[in-house]
Image 1 (cartoon, rainbow, N blue to C red):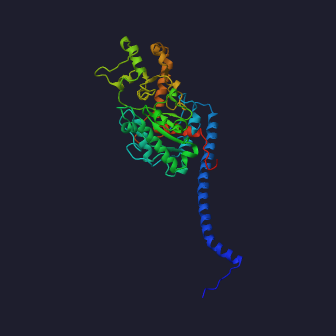
Image 2: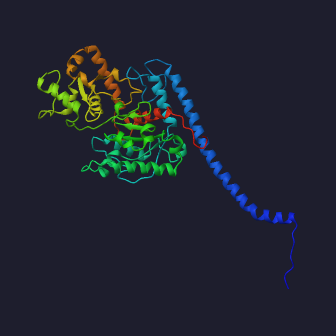
Length: 412
């Protein structure tokens, strides 16, 4: 006998169906609320960061209105003062704000030796030292990417060239693919690259190929902050978003680059006691003692515009003479290079003596005192100290971050 047919009224049937689907709907609703809350939290953190930066910009602008040669802010370690600064008060206010709010997130992706690593014992040691100092996590870094104001792309151009460049064929495709793949990985895993198109990300390089390496990713070249020793405006260096990186190497250099050959050809055989140019130092002559005993130290560009001679001259308390075209010296947005250095265009190499002899004794002594004062901003310390080169590089990155306003793509 067939079981009886049970007929349900429409309202009872609706109750059964609702009882089946409601748990799923409730779970879906809870998940949706959770995801939305994550987005809202991320957006609110970004909004808080941007609001804080707006306050900082206003604070620095107010400080810039003070035209005193000495900062009006209190500081137990150092109070910026004198004409070596474009505006001592604005710089000091900016630096103090940086110490309070600047946060860097270092992406964890990538393996040494190409990532999270760099040279510390060569002409490219500036690159390696900075990478290693950031990796220690003692200054400015955060483990929470939502807190960060900038994001560091931790590849070393020196290591990319060392391990991936094919000198037999001059092929750099592997370098380009590695950079492209890395941006693809972090942009797929995190939202930060996409929301700013890379404008709040930075790379760092002291290798001549830094600009070329960045060119494989158009947004990296055109939008990201590039901290480069090769700060050449004729090769796409943009001072409003890129930062000039001081090249530091305490070893004597080789003769390389066409400007150095021009200098040598013009002055080597003249045997002028006032302008001494050597391709090699005489035996028994110390390079650093030669610098310290000179009033002016010639700092010609090498194959690219940067030269470690600039920092070496500052260490030796010798007035640096920058011989280059299209070069943006380090920390130019803060430091007034004209107050403590001489800048000579390449076409004026034959007139070097005339130009330097035109500097009066009084003017020279003022410049030399300022060289002593500016030293603190180029000193490399085993453990970074306030206002030294490590902190000044970070300050350059901080200023570039102040130049942009990030709008999250969830809101657009």
